[in-house]
Structures are given as C-alpha cells and as structure tokens.
Image (cartoon, rainbow, N blue to C red):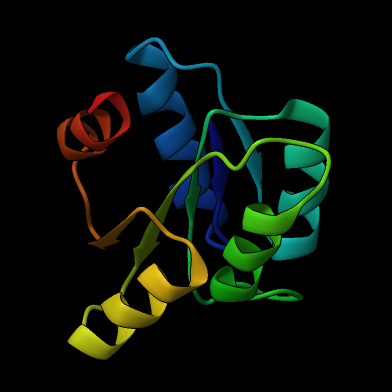
Length: 114
C-alpha cells in the first residue's frame, strides 16, 4: 500500500491505521516522490490526494496507468474535492475509486479488499 498526501500528519496516521489492518505501507508527500516510491515498492494499491505538489494526483494516476515498470495498482483518489466533475475527472485519469476526506479506515479497507 502506498499513501501519497502532502499532509504529513494525515499520511502518518493513515500509515499507522493501515499497518494495524495488516497492510505493508509506504508513504510519500508529493507526486514525484510517490511515483519514485511506486517504482521501487510496486504496491498493489495507492491512496492518492488530488492536490499534491510537484505532480498533482490526476497526472500521477495517469502516469501509474501507463508506467512500463509495473502493473497499475488499484488507485483511490482521497481528496477534499467531491463534486461530480471531480469524480468524473478522477475516473478518466485512471482512479478506481474516489473518496472525500475524511474517510474511515473501515471504508478504505472495504475498497482495498473488494
């Protein structure tokens, strides 16, 4: 599991919670570092904030979908942007799910295991 969010406290809290659920977790706080971590770690899933510095979440999802090094992980947009337009753009960029913050660990676990 890869968690990419520029909110360091949120990223750390999610990592701890997901590890308690049994996931192996790596974190990153910007899009470029997230992509580099994905190439190295090759996660089965990634939680990605849309409003990231360096490379935004939508552009990052597109890169994940076409990256030649690994199979595209399950991508979950985790953001404060929840309009129908944002959800449609997330789907078009390659996200499998779009959730609005705050999101519970139970909901994330259900999306990841489903």
